Length: 81
Image (cartoon, rainbow, N blue to C red):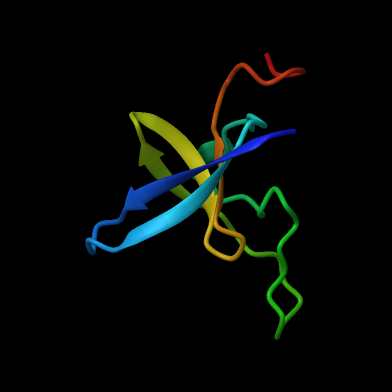
């Protein structure tokens, strides 16, 4: 699995470096947020970190602010209908 680092400017004008995973992930069901695909956990509570939906280069991504990784959301994931 390879990753590419990309600079992204958020809505507040801050530049962030995000690792884009080459793993494509299925869309969340009915717009629900999903747990980080790297398995990030909150250190205080032990709960899973939930991803945020972001759009970069006109593609939807699940983004984890904890590990600064984004995954392309795709309906073309193996095993998906």
